[in-house]
Image 1: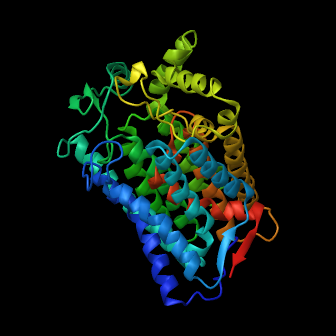
Image 2: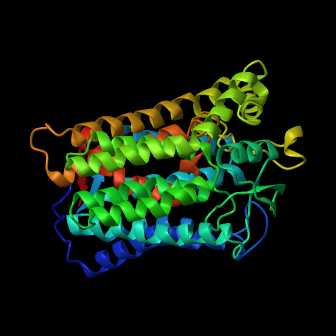
Length: 441
């Protein structure tokens, strides 16, 4: 792995305390997010909730760690700092609207953790503790998914009837329930408002469990038990994108595995089983998508219309807005938003393009590309000078990047820090592999 040696000054009590507080905040985020209905100050989209309060604290912790650490290891990645510079410029030029400040803080808190990730995890022991924490914490929302299915905890989100019928055809299960958004089939969400709050976290928990297995901290039985508990819960979220991406993660796990034949057989069996169960649902999605191509505005259950609205607004902007964006994503007076501001482009790529323009999107793609290339080199079994831990973290980074890049086509996974912070911690070494490091003393 790129950073296994602790920087000088690792014994500083102040630094260690701050580092542990920040790591604890990252691991606690999925638990804090369960209190999404609690408002500490104010109401509405920009009220102060527990998860927003935690997100505001993290950037200050990052700065404090840099200031109090004798030697801070930072990533030498131009895409990261270039993206932050464009984001800051977009906010200053367009004005600090609530939406612009909200978007900027989301990126600062994720990329801040990414920049100092190798200072936060200077040793393999620190890395293993974080991996274990991610796996253990994920079991709480997984348990809540099952409590929702048996009726002890209410569903917070209900799917539309057309998807309910597709689910019934695929599984023989049709459970009509009154959810937050009307009559339909109840979707397990792990206690969060939307199922993606749970599936986004699973995208990092599954690779974390695999990493623990590879480094000898989790037995094969333990890994299989974790997957057999988690995957059925994901199935009942009815999140078709998650089905595809988790199947992809399992496939990466299989392709890069050097374990004995039994492990490969079990992984292949799981992939086939997932395919058999979700195949009819995926087919209904594809069939519907093909049928909607003639009406792009109806593609992917209305996402096409949202994409058209944001793309049209961006194209009608001034040249400087096309280059550095509008700063925020909130669009007022959009008919489909029923009087409220439209603030979800339903694609991280489109969100970056709209908020930070072509320059920001290029910086963002450069960052992802550096991570992909670094992860591939680390994961390659014949890479010279590689260690087992390094190869394992390369595979983990590939799995997480696959989920992030794929989900970003239809969703906004990096809008949410419950995914963004673990993402930053676990792909930092891959970026460092390509871009290098520098030390602040």
